Length: 336
Ligand SMILES: NC(=O)c1ccc[n+]([C@@H]2O[C@H](COP(=O)([O-])OP(=O)(O)OC[C@H]3O[C@@H](n4cnc5c(N)ncnc54)[C@H](OP(=O)(O)O)[C@@H]3O)[C@@H](O)[C@H]2O)c1
Image 1 (cartoon, rainbow, N blue to C red):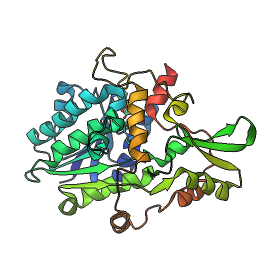
Image 2: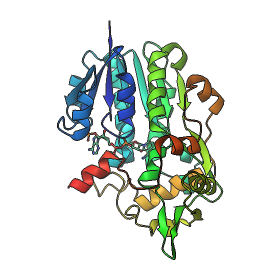
Image 3: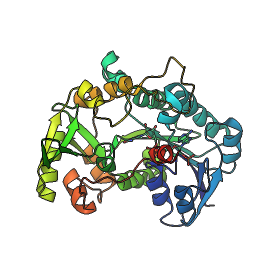
């Protein structure tokens, strides 16, 4: 019998390539849970073979109980920026429990690095949107691999963010030169090409015997921002430099509102939630100090066709540094 994969977060930047990779043939039925079947993203997904849209709120038990019916596989990307760290931990664990109750065969969780733990719980690495998912990964990793298989697909910043929240801007004093600014020092920061991310998810579902009980850390390349800027110049012929900014300078760049609360759909007075300044200080420190690691040899064997470098990605996609929308949350916010 054909399996049905319930995808949570399927309309988002991360979930879209997962749904697309599952819909490339007729092996799976894919059920995408979304708050609105009439969004541009949901309408597009509904055109893919084998994909159906299930309307409802992910963070609601009654909705989940309906959505889990006849589900054989689950892919979960909860949205920590919407619900905040505390709810992300709760729902990650609850989704695992419901999957067990509904006798799901394979549960796949979209993880992120547990920066605080990797940094020996030094508060400089405390980042709720990483740590929240990291704590859920620790919970899942402590579960048996039978009767339900589990896998974790741990990612990093999206390569496509180089056209959105990581994009370069003209040097005010010398507008012919573009500046890639980040508080990264000499850190090598991983980026993941999202189509390959989708292909790893597909590999996990297709190869349950190999992926069961595994946390797969994926990336395209770990790159120093200086090399990112010089690769960009090499490919486009446009002058570009890396500016290693302090965290204070970074938060003045108007990329995000440093005083907003991470968890826009949760109680803004919840004192456990961090501000963007607090959250992204821990975030950048985690990458700056190279706390994380990916096994690229393993990734080569799993996905021999993978994009191997930022340079290859820039060439493949005709990257120009110009703005392109990536995150659904940001588009929804802009519409409001
Ligand atoms: N940005 C990065 O580079 C990056 C990298 C790795 C991991 N992540 C993680 O990915 C998660 C976000 O997913 P994404 O990158 O795919 O973001 P996105 O493009 O902004 O998509 C947001 C997703 O969250 C869903 N959602 C459910 N309830 C929501 C609510 N109350 N408010 C807003 N959205 C809601 C949306 O579904 P509907 O609107 O259809 O209901 C949509 O599928 C975060 O936890 C983040 O930490 C981000």
